[in-house]
Length: 215
Image (cartoon, rainbow, N blue to C red):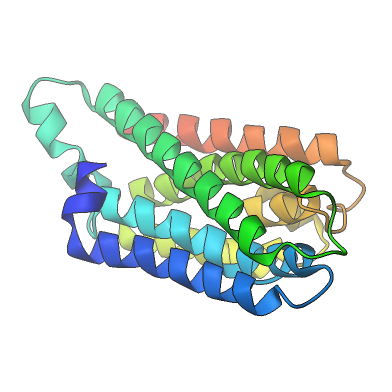
């Protein structure tokens, strides 16, 4: 939290994506299904992944991830433990920010053609939080590979495969988040399957980061 709030670029990125998402929500407000339109459009395509990317980038830094955990290892923590605690903290922070952003987008954009407001708020809140955890773990793993280059590569993979209906879309967060927010299913995977997929993505890339730390 301190890394994000004390870093000027981190603060600007955090506030910037909140502002952009809320502007998109306000522009969609006049439509009968404003919430559905913005959630399946700019929110899942840009705001949620790039907000998560900005948070992970601020915590991880530009260079190899070992530099980001150096303050903890210098104080005596083992490298795997430092990575685990940093990853968990980043995931929790990203979940909170994503859930808050989702709630605000629904409140601003909700229209007469959308589902009841209470149900929309609840669904968007938990899907955004789950998606934020998956994205944080996903980008975190990229950071342990090649620093900012690996993280950016993972972002490109999410953009490239998250919007298409193919086997590759099963392994990135965006397609499953979109499905849970009312979009089409990912291939033949049900919504319960997409929940499981996001949990699996979070766990897999978290474990991947720990393995990288041990090496």
